[in-house]
Amino acid sequence: MKCDPTIYRGAPPSLAVKPRLLRHLLLPPLILLLTIGLGYAGYRVSEHFGIRSLSENGERQLELHARTVESELGKYTYLPSLLELESSVSHLLADPTAQNRVTVNQYLEGLNRRSRSRAIYVLDTTGRVMATSNWRDADSYLGEDLSFRAYFQDAVRGQPGRFYGIGSTSGEPGYYLAHGLEEQGKIIGVAVIKVRLEALEERWQRARLEAYVSDENGIIILSSDPTRRLKSVRPLTADTKEQLARSLQYYWWPLNELQPVEREHLAEGVETVTFAASSGLAKDEKEVSYLAQTRKLNDTPWEITLLTPLQDLRREAANQGMLVAVAFALLAFLLIAWNERRKVIATRLAAREALQEANNQLERKITERTAHLRASNERLKGQIRERRQAEDTLRRAQDELVQAGKLAAIGQMSTSIAHELNQPLAALRTLSGNTIRFLQRGDLKVAADNLNTINNLVDRMGRITANLRSFARRGDDQGQASLGKAVEATLQLLALRLEAAGVELQRDFSDVQLKIDQTRLEQILVNLIGNALDAMQDQAAPKKLWLEGEPGDGKYRLRVRDNGPGIDPESRKHLFEPFFTTKPGEQGLGLGLTLSASLAAAAGGSLSVEFPATGGAAFVLLLPLLQPAKAEPI
Ligand code: ADP
Image (cartoon, rainbow, N blue to C red):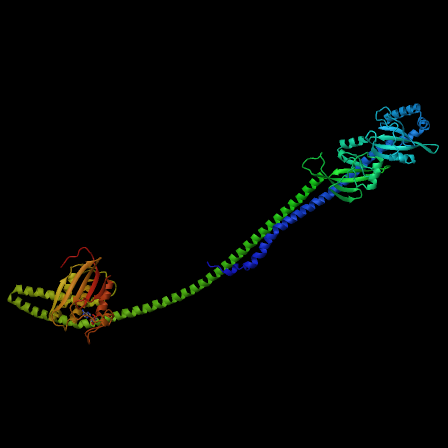
């Protein structure tokens, strides 16, 4: 099968390959970029909604804890002002005797114990401690000058003193609430209560809550994480620093700034902050992020900040982002696979169509060629019919010619037969006359001899007439003949001519039984020997005729050879053609060899000619043997 190459014609390779190559090169990085981008977007969206949900929850928590802090602070707000009502305090401030001091000290001691505050003490208007609840302790404030404290300065001016600081004596942090003690509209002293707020921190720690409270200076005064305590949440100005140093509010504490690694403002009082990891955190986490929500605490200049860790949220968001990226990658992979499959199917369809087309073309060609073949077959059949008709016509003409030839030969032979018959007839007449006379004389023996000779002559005449009949017979030869008898009969027929010509005859053959009618074999031999005699007619002696035979391959080969003039090359070509003769006048009809050859062929044999180097002509008669083994020499 030869496919049409144009069916598979595609775009030139340089043009077809480049865009595909480009696509294959660009697609993977593009998909990777999109995967990363979508993953990041998924992360951000998840984080955004997570933060929103966290901040809603955080707001409630913040409110709750702010209220707790406010109520904790509120518990002590009115305690210092209560001392205004205590007459022993005003007596002491008016008359600072040892007795009065002891009375007030004991009173304050009891009050402090009941209120569970850290210390309660009373200052005069110069800032000196006049009486204190811790008067028994070694580090008692008694007699100390605390005029530099801001809470004293506020209170002595009649304003509420609110102050978180580190005690200058004990070095212990605490919340100081101061109140100016008035008598008849005049400040006579200041009552101060120091409260420890560690309970709040402990409560936060127990609840695993991260929170801190920063004061008006931005210094963290309460923190669930002790490392953040007394650090500033915003930068301190030089003035503030100087003022704080002067008031010793935080004693000599370094007041480092709490510096977040990253800070992002989200809304009013809401931001995300990232701190460098503190020692308490897991070692593999270098940074920790929080959602920081801040709210002002009522009745104080302080702010409370709730820190909600963002690790879990970020981990969740990262998982979500990863999920989005994986989903997209999967989708992209499925799309690519689907597209590839679609292309493969399209290619297969195209190939199938091309194959179908090639098949159709092939079938068309086969149909066309079959039609051509059928037409030429029909033409050939017509030609064969015509040839057969021509052959039939030719054969009929040939048969007719052969028949005509036979009739002509009979005509010719009848002359010689008449001549042949006249001689025995004449002999018969003489012999029969003589026999009558010998019988009359009573010489029976000579009469019997004559009658025997008469009998032989009659036989011979019968055979001559039989020859005539056989010439007219048609059809295949199914008979059998004795070569010896045939040769004898022929020589008898031609005896006169042989004698007249003085031919020397040489016989060298066996008396074999041949598959041919006896008469036909005699006819062939008459023709061959007759021709030899004709050829040697005008020749000087010695005239020789050889009859040589030999068996071989189931057949017997009889050679009739003469030493006549032979046959010239031009005549050799036409010897077996009907009506070819070189004999002058009425002598030859040119049918002898033709008929002999056809008789031999009808018997399954052949007749051919040879030209011996010694001269003359040799006709070879090949005939099938009846019993090939029984060949005896004559
Ligand atoms: P016809 O004898 O009537 O001519 P044939 O067919 O028997 O016809 O012979 C054809 C020719 O073959 C003869 O005319 C003769 O020229 C040639 N021919 C046949 N036998 C011999 C022979 N033995 N020697 C020479 N020529 C021969």
